[in-house]
Image 1 (cartoon, rainbow, N blue to C red):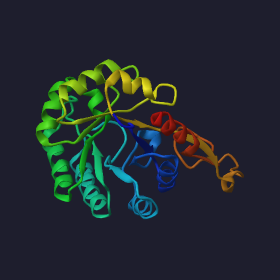
Image 2 (image 1 turned 90 degrees about the vertical axis):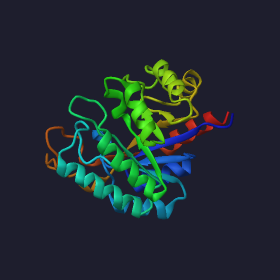
Image 3 (image 1 turned 90 degrees about the horizontal axis):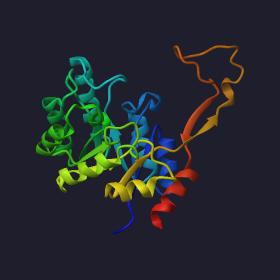
Length: 250
């Protein structure tokens, strides 16, 4: 078996550039990673595709806080999905659930068909980790033609959910790819691959960066409730991603 594929979670075009430089094979492009990742801007996608040759999977998530959307929110997601595909996304990452946490088959079908019509991949994200019966959800996702599921095995991290991820691989039986993600790092990446039988992993690896333009903040904050430093932001740590990529090469 060859080297496992490394997918890196990115929050900007700069993140994508750094991830490719460090040896990532594929990226998931988002905005607002603090809230688990929301739909990226078209500008970020355009620059990422222009400046790199890496496969870019674009998140389609119209808001934080759950996966059951109002009609206007889902309409927004559909329009975003169309634009992201039009502007070069290599696939879409999404997850839509009913109020009771079960899969929303109708809305999932809409997004899968958009991917199919564009000849691109459809990926169901970690919303799978909160469904009441993942096997039932898998049956529907495979019937709908979803290419891949990102999961931590219905546990807080993929290492904790390794047994379930291994069972997911067996259950999918080659009809759908299983992508472990959540809590994967340089210390455990090869263990996760060995324990689950997966051939790819999804991980984040960011470092704190400083923007001195807001250092003289006078106690002013531009967000609500939580007050992170206004002169700092996060970017993919290319050295760390490079370390993980080298581990996968061994």
